[in-house]
Image 1: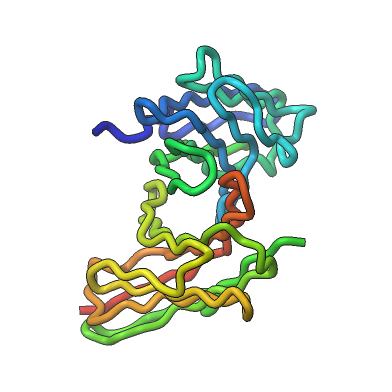
Image 2 (image 1 turned 60 degrees about the vertical axis):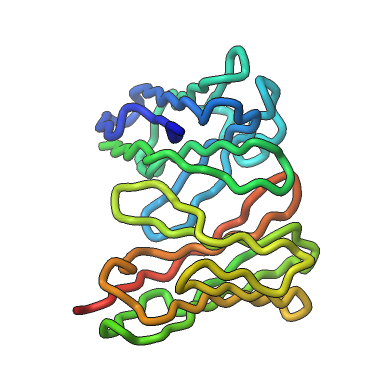
Length: 114
Length: 111
């Protein structure tokens, strides 16, 4: 079974530029998550989708971050404009059911904002 | 505020030692608690998931326990190996798969 795919793996941008990350979950997984992991910290949930609907985006900085999951499969997370404090690893995860299933994580995208 | 704390932040042991990683959480009304492993430059791998009704789970050399009343979980690693070197994260599921993570314990097992 193929795992969660993410691209790009690394990205370096200047502050105030925009950037987009892509995630393809495990086939059949209805729930998709985006996490931000700052160096030395645990992952923090940014947004959770159930199929193509948003379940939780309470910690998403909506003035600069946006995410979509068209057709309930793959997803894109965008930052515009980026700030220095957005430097982090962005992790995508998926799970089959919402409540009790474990989440499967992709390798992440390491973003550096200069 | 929902928080997860992991102690110690870093641990270095010689190969073959048994060790315990600690996790404490503030919300006793959890659905489950999970332990993950994170290798440098890679995503997280789920190790063990303990449902709120369970006391422990075992997988090979790993054993995780859960005490909801005290808000604590431990991950026991038996006969540690250099390949166990990684960061170990615990996360509580507060409902609808919303995971709140700790900051992790960096483990180094020396040959």
